[in-house]
Image 1: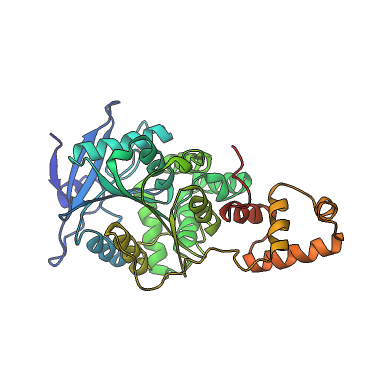
Image 2: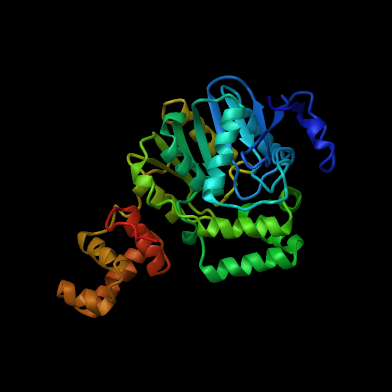
Length: 373
């Protein structure tokens, strides 16, 4: 049987102790093991239908919810559910050594937590890096998934940034984890005060060593579950801030285009971590969905691109197929200057910055099939 302890008791050997607020309910932290023998830490709070959140890039059971906004989000998520979350291998209270990230290992970690917690079937939240693993788990074990939520998530890491940008970010993390954590904090919590940025920077450094953080960035960028998504048969919500600074809206639109009958809820905002500053709208949308009804506020779910003319849609489709402006003009029997005008107009309407972004929108709109990777 998994070991049982309170959050404070677990915390004592991993940095400073956080005193529980007299008004707050404290989660119970337990440990379970993978077949490899690696130890995972998971927490549980509340009663009701199980709601399990997969960790993002970095995690720490004790530190993650010490920010006041995050504490409020956790309280809401556990209000009517048994809310369960855990530290991925290499992070937080789970084993720090021997971390070899892979999609199969991510799926095994989720399965081990569900088994140890005695949960046969649950609604799952794939936050950020938790998106691809939750998709793979739902594909592999559909009988164990009630409802599926992608929150600030993606299907393939390469949509997030270019390989050169990712290499530069990994180098900052590797060479100077203090500077790297602060750079990432500014990206993930762009509206944060100096205190918020300081808190998030410290959280990242407590959550994982620099080498593990770099490994997980590399893992994130290489993930791709696009081929699994069309086969999912689970009620699915995709919730994403329109101007997320870390993972572009195009990633959410790709998820929506690939998952059958998925519902996309686009919210106004630019935060990536929805549990630090703007948790209210995101959490309420998640709770409404897992409860089986729609929220009645704050939703901007109209698919992008509906205002494009038929000619602009055709030009966008050809752009996504890699056709040059000259060849588009020949194919449509129009002047190159006319093609350029259409391109300018559709870029403005879709708020995209180049052909790569435009291709992602074309995929999300169903104009072309996703490219194989």
